[in-house]
Image (cartoon, rainbow, N blue to C red; front, side, top):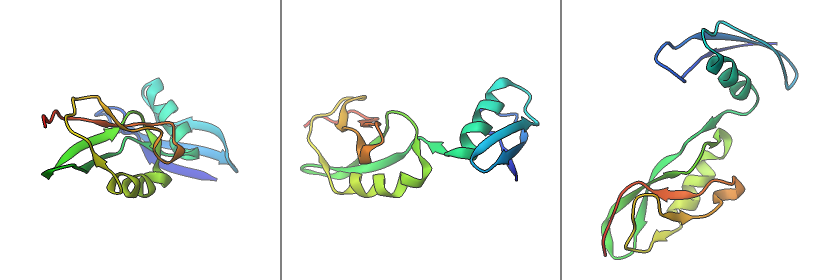
Length: 118
C-alpha cells in the first residue's frame, strides 16, 4: 500500500511517499531532510497533533487559552476537546500552569497559554 503525504515540519512542504505493508512502514521517499522521514513514519501509523483550545474559567466570561503539553493522537482530539469543555479553570493561572493532567489518558497535560489574575 502507498500513502501520499505533505510534510508539515518546515516550510519546504516535501511531498512524501510512504510504502506500507499493513501497519509497517517499509520506506519513505521524497523527503529533503531527516525530519520528513520521521514525520512520515509517525503520520502513516498514528497521526499526532498539539491541540489548542479555549476553556472556561471560574467567575469569568472570557475564555482561557490552553493547549496540550505535547502532541496527542489525532483520533482523540474531539474526546480531549469534550473533556476540556467539561472543566473550568481555577484562577489565577500563569502561562504553563497545568489545568488538567493526563487528558483522556494520552499522557499530555492541558496547560495555560495565557496569564489571568483573579
